[in-house]
Image (cartoon, rainbow, N blue to C red):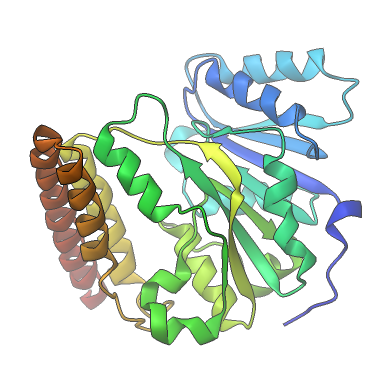
Length: 308
């Protein structure tokens, strides 16, 4: 493991935003990124053949901000070649940053210090990756707010390989909704797995820990991001997660799954009972069933694929 990393305050910082028909929100996001106390030095929008003129909008935005000191450009790809790991890997290798940030198109920095804060943990040269905190949108349903509160608490933490026995797979907690990578560490472990449909962030987090690096969660680096998934969407999402985790157990060194899911259910259900939100509680029970069934079906599918 290399530890002679550059000083982040004098380093080149890249921001990568994958897009698919984001509408005007991508311009809002880019505008907020330029208002940061620590601006990125370059912004790369990777657009998967959007039909809402995303590429043109971004190029117009870049032309209107030519004097801002930030290089803003678009990489256009065919939608059919998009891959959660492969596309991000391509974009990172196209970037110049000593530190490379990823932000999804529907995540908005919660304040002007988001980038400054997500870079802060890199003052520890053993940190390879940092994830930020997700604050629910104003339209998030009550159970979704509680899920975000549980998964993205107000306390920051750092985890290393010594934490794997205690936390199991939770030690690899990471999210590319709002993340930052030390380029040298990323290249050292070989980059994202691909092709892959989800969880590229978890698998590279595991690679970092097993390579001797640490990963951080910084609760001060906040973005506004949440989803009101239907039960079908929740099933499909957890199917994909279960399938990829089953297929990549070797990367996780068969770390134990732990009881984090049950802890989440208890946290949300207890809060909803206290709020006397019984209708939402019933809805949440259905949501949990969709998660569980999707995960089990995906896990079974992943195991079958490994046998062939």
